[in-house]
Structures are given as structure tokens and as C-alpha cells.
Amino acid sequence: MPLLWLIVIVLALAAIGYVAARGRAMKSAGGDSRHLHSLPSYYGSNAAIKVVVPAFLLLIVWLLAQPLYVNAVVSGMIPDTEVAEGSNLSLVMAEVRRAADGIDNAIAAGLMRPDAVADLGASDVTQTLKDAGQIVTSELTPAVLDAARKFRVLNNSGTLYMTVAVIVLALAGLGIALRETNKDFRARNVVETSIRYLLIAAASIAILTTVGIVFSLIGNTIRFFSLYPAGDFFGSLTWSPSFGGGSELGIWPLLWGTLYISFVALLVAVPIGLFAAVYLSEYAGPKMRAFAKPALEVLAGIPTIVYGLFALLTVGPLLLSVFGSDGLGWMQGTRAVITAGIAMGIMLIPFVSSLSDDIINAVPQAMRDGSYGLGATKSETIKQVILPAALPGIVGAILLATSRAIGETMIVVLGAGAAAKLSLNPFEAMTTVTTRIVSQLTGDADFASPEALVAFALGMTLFILTLGLNVFALYIVRKYREQYE
Image 1 (cartoon, one colour):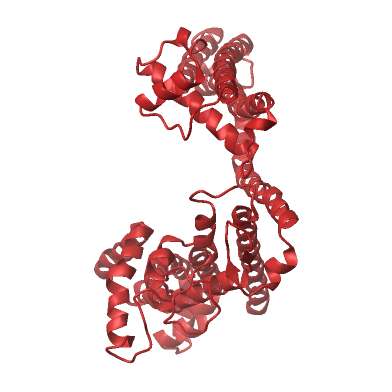
Image 2 (cartoon, helix red, strand yellow):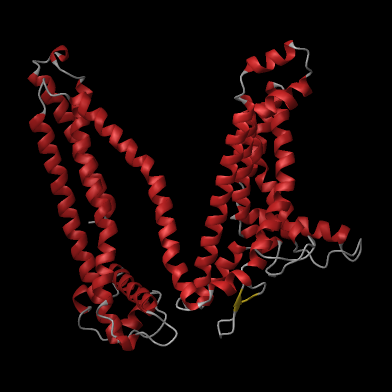
């Protein structure tokens, strides 16, 4: 059964439980809701919660655990001879999953009978999958085909067991809810407690996501440093990966390019965004504000690839006409730090302006009135009262823009080029950490080599960098608040 239909069945049972529990509660009270401990809707909500929450929790846990179990069982079937030199078990398992998915798609398209899967040889299955337009990177070996067959069996069996277990648990929850429903049952207390736990679980997702990101990076980062010396990674000033061997994987050229381009972007975004926020909140009339604020926020909805094309086709040629060989002679091509920095800065303007505008508007009007009452002008009030009061929030907006700039990829690829170098010249091409992560994990990279695993070390470095920025910003904000208060 498709997952969507399983979800629909559970939701239908929850709706049935809501109506049935509500009616049962009213019946136990003789049709008079005044005799109920809680409102009738609470009895229905209690039944719906007892149907949906346990069933969906089981569904989520099963969906997370089943792939781990299936991969563990199937990977044990792969002989060492299948793991060729320059490859690893993960790549072989990827081929097994592609073959299993291809067989399922071929059966769904009517190009292969389900009962014929076990009888066909590896060459026949490979040709059938290719004829069906499925992705098969090479000729399937008998071991990979057997693993794919086992993969399908385990997946199909697991999905069937999951469907039965989820529906049975939903029915059990419905039965329990109906059995405990009566006029004296404290349904409101149970529902409110359940909602509180659901909110706690929702708030915990952010923490668990952060922990998951860290652990997903740590394992491969440790593996990288076991293959490549950490001293060379942090001590070398050269970035020169070579999948044939002899690579120099120093992070400093990439880190310098990341910080340099982000700095140029912030030089564009922070003054313009902050001035725009001050104008919108303190000077603009209602009609102007109603037009200007949405117009600024439109910039936030433009895809970054469009900004990259803007940098490549408009900003770069414009800068080249001024600073190139026909002008000052400083710029050799359209791709440079300043090209990507300007385009990225334009992209960041709505992040700074919109957040700063909301923060400035949140400053109490009484502080403005008090300043005017002491004889201060509007500009003095803005400089000496409003901006200091809003500074913690403005720092947060700038931090958000900084993190956004550090993590940008497409604008850098199209606007700044791919040269890893240490230079102060903003008119030269450079690259960043994020673009190198994409480069090292695409193409024909061997995921067992340091040239591919270095992407995880780069990602961990970016994570620690942004975490340090957050801690530093919190320190500055708290220190300023102590002085201001």
C-alpha cells in the first residue's frame, strides 16, 4: 500500500474517532453538555490524538529503521570481490538500490513480470532495465542482482508489516479512547497535556536536527583526517586536489575567498539595508511604505541562480568596462570577488532591511516622545535613542546576512570563478568553501579518497565558523544590553 493511502486511512480513523467519541460523551451525559466534565470537542480531540499520534510515531520510527535494517542485511550479501579497487561498499549498495528501484519501475510499466524476476539472469535484467530507461551504470553482476532481489523482498515485506502494524495501532488507540469516554472523563486535561508534549517534541526537532548535522559530519571528517594529515589541511596555503594522487588540500585559500566575498557583500548589504530600514520606519509615509517594503522583499524571493546570472551577464561586464583594459586596467575578466560580492550584497539587502525595519518599529513610541520632549531632532533621536535600543536585533539581522553570505554557492560559481588563491585584489577571481564542497562531491569522485572526503572537513569548518559567529554576536548583544540598561 502506498504511504499516502496509509496516512489517509489513519486520518480517516481519527475523524471517525472524533465523531464517535463526541457522540458517546453526549450520550453518557443524557444529551446535556452541562453534565460533561469537558466540552464535547475535547472528547473528540482525545480520540483523534490517540489514533493519530501513536500511529504516526510508529510510522516515522519504522520508516527510519527499515532502511538501516535492510541495508545491513543486504550489504552482508556483497562479497569482497564485488568491491573493486577505487570503490567501496557504499557505491556497490547504491548500485543495488538502483537495480531494485529499476526492477520495480519495470514491473510497474509492464516490461517485466513479477514472477520472472527470480528466473532472469544478470545480463537479461540489465538489458531489460536499459530498455525501460532505468539508470544502470554498468552490467549487473549476479551478486548485485541477488542483493537487489533480496532488497526488494525485504522492502516489500517491511512495508506490508508496517501497514498492518500502523493500522492495528490506530484501531487500538480508537478502541481505548472510546472505552474511556464518559461524562466524568477529564478529556480537557488529557488533550492539553498531549498538546504540551507535542509542542515540546516540535521544539526539540531543531535541537535534534543540529545534533544530526554534527554527527553526520563528524564521522566522515574523522575518516578524512585518518587519510590526510590535519597539519597539512590547516597548515598548507595551497589548494590543489588531484584524484590521481599528490593532492594539496590546504583550507586557507578557500576560507579566505569565503570571508573576502562575504565581506564585500556585507559592505553592500548592511549600509543600504539599514538605511532603507530607517527610512521606511521613521520617514516614509503609509503609502510609500506600503509600496517600498514589498518591493524590497521581492528581492528575497528571487532564486540565487538568477543573481548568479545577473552577476555574470550584467555586473561583471559593467565592472569590466570601468576597471578592465578599456578603463583603469585593474580587472582581467568578468569573474572576480567584487562581481560576486556586489550581486550577493544585493541579494542580502532584504534580509537586513526587513528584519531591521521590524526591530526598529518595535522600539516603544514612548522613547521617541521622550527624546522629542527633551528637544532632540528626528535625526538625533534616531542616532542616540532608536538605533541603540534596536542594536541587539540589528546585530542579529547582520549575523543572519553573514551566515547567508558564507553559505552561498551559485552566485560565487558564476560571479567569482573557481580560482583558489590568497590575494587582496578584489578584481581577481576566487572561490569559496561551499563551491569546493560541491565540486569535490560531484563527478566521478571516489568516496573512499581524501579528495572526496575533504568536503566533509570543509563542511565541518563552515559549521564551526558560523557557530563561532553566533556565540560572538550573543556576547556582543549581552554586553551592550548590560551597558544600555
